[in-house]
Length: 333
Ligand SMILES: [Zn+2]
Image (cartoon, rainbow, N blue to C red):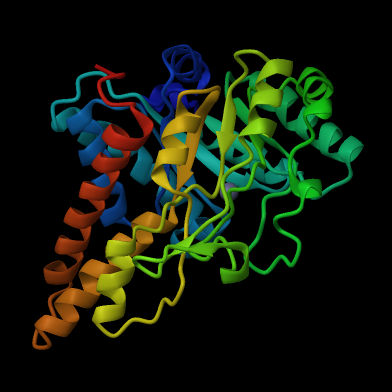
């Protein structure tokens, strides 16, 4: 058993309280390799932004959970080396799907875990979430829960109202589980194809897809029921068209990839939404940079010569998100 406090990590409690009061949101960036982690820490240190490092199921399978934990510990020291005197870094389990997994993360030094039991019936979601909260809180680890079903790319009915979080359930859910934050569904979705072309309109000038707006009415109703309670948005990449264009211009094939417009995320960050998850955008930045090198310099075979530019591009993206979308810069001096 190792406490995250010994590793120099923090939980989300104070961070979220300040973010809700201050009208900004904390970036939650997924990582599964060194270059991504370096870019996240460089961007956070340079902007003095609190940051949440997220480890997903895919990342655990790809890179190994233990190794990722040690990388996060190293990230704290790296941040200090970069001149960030008091780094505020959370190590968070993204989409934990069982009590055992959440417990193992708490025991190995994660400072925050998500238990996603949103696919279970309501009462079972409450029971499992409460079990995780009871365990995690003994060690001052914060817990994110989920209520409502996030739209999926393959989901035929993803835009239907029934998938949104039901505001009438949130007080009961938060009270009975004791969770510290709540992921809700208001129209965001995972992946680089968040909407089907038939769900969108098309900009007549550019021919680009314009996605349907987020359900701000649902968000505002939830805020009214739970004033000041930390709200989380998953699946909030914007799928920047510049990256999609670079990828497609250099041999890639991402037709009609579409995300959540940044203005809408900026709007959400001003509300009780205090954690915004971004994963796909970083993948796109990395892929765009690598494809460009491969296409323009076919003789290059030193991985540092393409992973280096990929890292620079990701750092640029993270800084843009922190400063221009979430507003978290300067909040962790
Ligand atoms: Zn998610």
